[in-house]
Image (cartoon, rainbow, N blue to C red; front, side, top):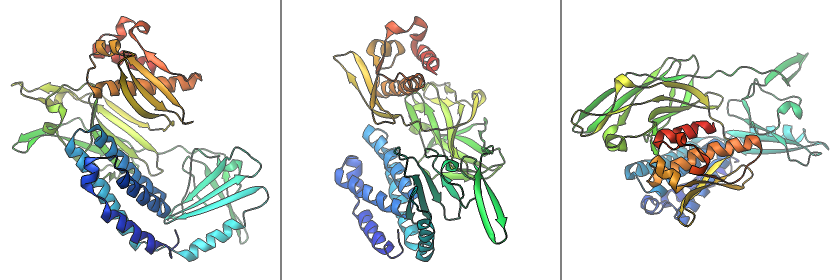
Length: 432
């Protein structure tokens, strides 16, 4: 986005934002006219900064997920308010941000000098980010190196693109996201830097969820409190948390936060406004998702235990019986997406469609008999089982190179896999 164009885009996006109708979104999350406005706003944001555009798209996906499910009205409204607040905040940031066209033009001239008969070069200036895409003309695969130059001068590299040393000999940087080192050298007044084949161990922040839950109750409801602490020497950013179980997930409607090394934050869970207050939830955990400063995303969790209070009126989370802590694992996107699901009455099974990286669809089915022996009767339980088993089975098939439609039935699994919820867990874990 050039400086001369920014005012018109700011004016357009303000007009689109003011025309958005919150009530229309609540009434119908599939309102085409409203969706078109969101798509246009996201496109303008992406032209300004890829991160801002992606941020809006993530907010919209989260809202649609809950709104289409039609449950937890308060959470749906919170998601929508968060999305509107995000748009408003980013409009103001975009308005006051000064784009340096002189700097952009200088970079453009440098990139033009890179082009020759063997290489093609494309550049895109998106507000705070400057994208340099370089490819080999001789390759028909379209493989390329994609550099994203940030506002502070750092260079990020998309891990799905070619390793830079296969195509580019020299580039100005310090390190890359995945540990490729850049060697700097000086010869008189001539300076240069180049990629070298060496890996540097990544520094992973560690967030610990302390086991000393404290609970409180009163006229405003019943709450449980947790303390999330960064016990490492590395910053953790974009932290979100929540409570998750089988066919259950709760997340607070708050902005992601940051924890510096050895810092902690107390968070609050309103027990009395969720299913946990009145129902037993299987596989219950408190979890955190967070990123390191390189943008890698991690997930950690701690098991929770429910117990009915002596009067039997409701459940509470038990501080003395908090379960095992599972340390951070790297979240990786393998391109498999949950597409849709429904119950096929004629076929006596429930079916989910998964979209693979090549855009093809694979169907995973579970027979109604198998669902019955597990005790899964609600839509949320069936969908959760299809999702968990489907993702695991497809990833298993991808490894073996035999991706195809698959049906889970009682004929294919022994009695130990049909023993209620424990049988389901054994089957789930046996897949990997």
